[in-house]
Image 1 (cartoon, rainbow, N blue to C red):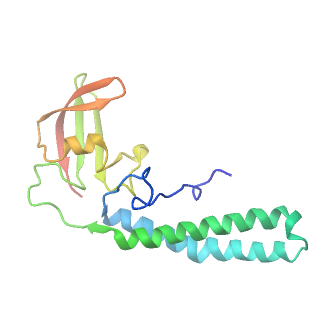
Image 2: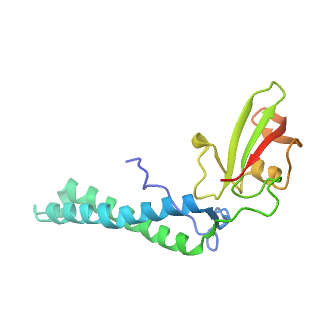
Image 3: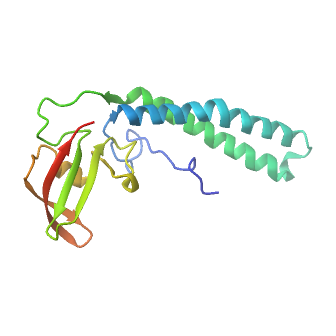
Length: 175
């Protein structure tokens, strides 16, 4: 089953395929991760544990699809809780604005205008809260790295699927 709890986590210390993540996160992102962890522990874990117990009471576990499925989901949930516990301990919440509000730093909402006059707005956030559909770009992304330290009305060359494109920074704001 494809679900939101099936993503694999790779430990950068032991797995060469893993990418090192920045340990920064916004206050909003931290609260969201914390509430996800709490939901999994308080709601999902007991719900799945009960289903496993009920399925186990039905007899032979080797031929019991409900037992097998719910046991697998319970293990995935426990694995996700363990990952979130570890990750939450590693994260550093950035809850202050930078001294220079005229430059792009972590947590900034940046509005870019392309050569055709189309604007797009992105917020530079931690990798744990990145979501392109909401305009949240990881600080580890190549585009973010190129934007860091830039200022209003500065021209930047950013990578696109077609190559590179020229943008002008038209707005920088911090919440």
